[in-house]
Amino acid sequence: DSGVTQTPKHLITATGQRVTLRCSPRSGDLSVYWYQQSLDQGLQFLIQYYNGEERAKGNILERFSAQQFPDLHSELNLSSLELGDSALYFCASSAGGMSAFFGQGTRLTVV
Amino acid sequence: AQSVAQPEDQVNVAEGNPLTVKCTYSVSGNPYLFWYVQYPNRGLQFLLKYITGDNLVKGSYGFEAEFNKSQTSFHLKKPSALVSDSALYFCAVRRSGNTPLVFGKGTRLSVIA
Image (cartoon, rainbow over all chains, first blue to last red; front, side):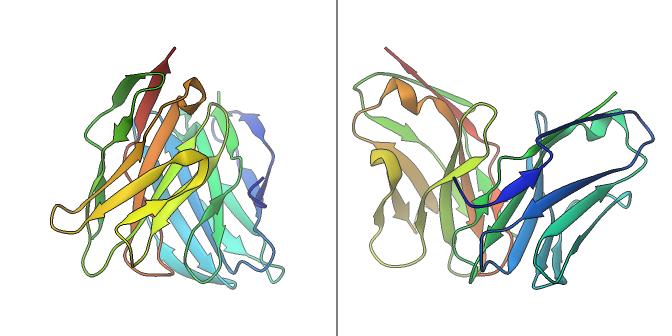
């Protein structure tokens, strides 16, 4: 158990809908990272938050947004969903920037 | 910008034989290097990291990796493979302490009994 919790584990939704993925980092970790894993694109970095502030942005679509709350949990919001957004979405957390620990992921299926 | 290359999509090895999963990286400055393993329907599990110091780092489950600065490589090794080592392995690099990890595309390891 990495100590990083992601909910829900599975999500099936229709095109055009909006979903929210939730991540609780390890206790004390200030950094939260979001990654998307798809078969053809591998692990793509989406966005990083550090202590509530956006720290780095990767290949995140404008339809996607994230935030980190005062209790350090983070949410990734995906809107106007398309079939191509179907993927595994991972959250990771780290303290002091060394090893990052990953949650079990949320498998999103857009139908 | 940093990048990681894992030149082999698939590595097959017989149980009991040594295994190597290759990784080369590109990053400005000193690299922070990592290996992760992903089992089916699971998240990524941290195996080991190189930050500084001894070029040979030891990690979980008997894995080790050798940092080679001149060849910009960080190959994952294990002296004797187990069937249970079959999984997807990812090499990753970060430029400094609090920056995102950049991953390779992954190498699927298959250990055959």
